[in-house]
Length: 114
Length: 114
DNA sequence: TGAATAGTTAGGTCAATACCTAAGTATAGA
DNA sequence: TCTATACTTAGGTATTGACCTAACTATTCA
Image (cartoon, rainbow over all chains, first blue to last red):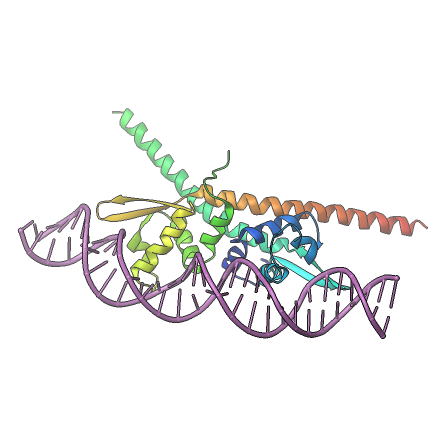
């Protein structure tokens, strides 16, 4: 069963920003606190936590408090759902292309049989 | 070699809208003209063609004129690049999870060996 | 308990996005 | 050549998004 509390377009919206893409890449390397994640970015902390909020609302990350820190982790399920959506569209298109090429090939063969 | 005239976040931005997601799904079923694509949407045509422009700038679709129509087609390469980006992040995360679970398992075994 | 640390809340600015209507251009067909 | 079709261009509005600063809360540790 699909991990689907959110529509894919909210996942895509969450990834439509270089800061948020970078956060996802960082979290693929392991869990991290808000300030660990924020450190590489030249951005005020409230702006950064807003990005984390977008990622969390989209279901791409989860977080919990540990003492005075908040730890974030990737939710691979949301990534997989978005991948599946794209793969479905792409494969249908590719299947159509294959049929089209087969058709062209048959036409060529028939015309060379004249 | 990757099909990469655009950064992935422009692809995600293009998909971050339900109208544009629907256009991609429609085009996975085959090429279509602007008005064919627009028909299901309750939206003025200029608004709709703006969405097509976003998809085309992101490299997700290509289009050409045929008589007085414009025909649109999916560019599967852009979809594949975005899939690859997500799959890379997800697999790194999953690999880390596997190592973590192996570690937990070993710890349990060691403690039961006491 | 007082100071430092980690993050949150409130509130504001500016640019980009998603829509619209009205009027234009280009092609096809009678 | 006139008319209908298929978009495109121009220009406007309202909402959302990405940032900021200032001030707050919660937790740790000396």
